Length: 238
Image (cartoon, rainbow, N blue to C red; front, top):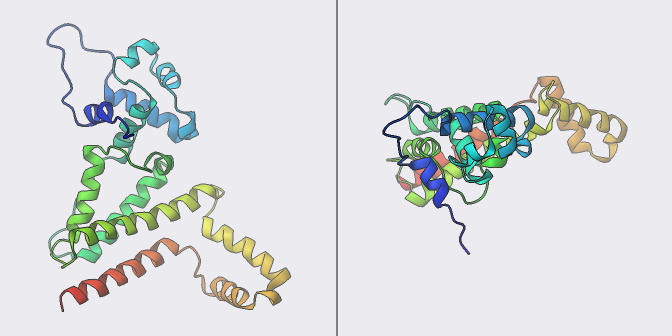
């Protein structure tokens, strides 16, 4: 059975009825979304509830339910609020590679600011105008490359998936340091004790530490993805 997303569509895309007379409403969808995002930023998505949001806003549960019917719709509004406006596109001299690379770094920044978005943006769901504008910009960067529509969409999913993977590793790490550096420290200690059984890893770790190669997973992976897309685009152009 298909999920009923009608409430999320209405809240994200409108139109929203406006009172023609009387005092200005004490609440708004924007205030509710920002309150939920504030809780999630501080404590994670699991800490968000309708009751917590009403407490932060100083209103009754009945008051908030007049605007938002449940937590699923609340989270959809929070995502739209937290992700913000899509970054302005690069000027015309910039090619698809620079545009898509810049987009990926901007997305990584958003995930760093709001780690709970990693949990809130999985699975089939309704995206709002802002989030869809982010996708539009990335897909548009590949216009004129010769890639099919499906390939352009898949390329954006691939880049976004790489950014998400690195962001998830960063969220799981000690916030006081870089997750890749922390991993290399742990791995380095293991290699000191057991390196003779894993000579390839031991050599790679030693080289990485000597030449300062750690902490580049986001950029390294991104550039290799773009390299692959570049080869495919070259094939399409003959």
